[in-house]
Image: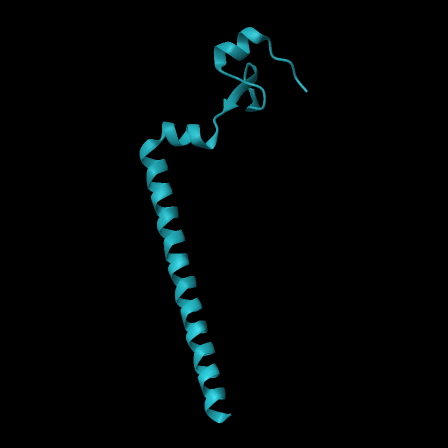
Length: 88
């Protein structure tokens, strides 16, 4: 655990629970706050929106495939049900 003075936390927008990175530099140790995913999207708006759209399209395609498979299974089940009634 590490203590950061309130003045520095306020100045650099570091809140409890935020992730920070410590790295060695030529002059000592540098500490940098790691932005949340939502903040990163805000910084790289075009990239974030593009990525979100791509993910959404991918999920829609997966759902369409699942729905088509479900319909095929239901149709096969109905055919088997009709075939067993004909035999009886």
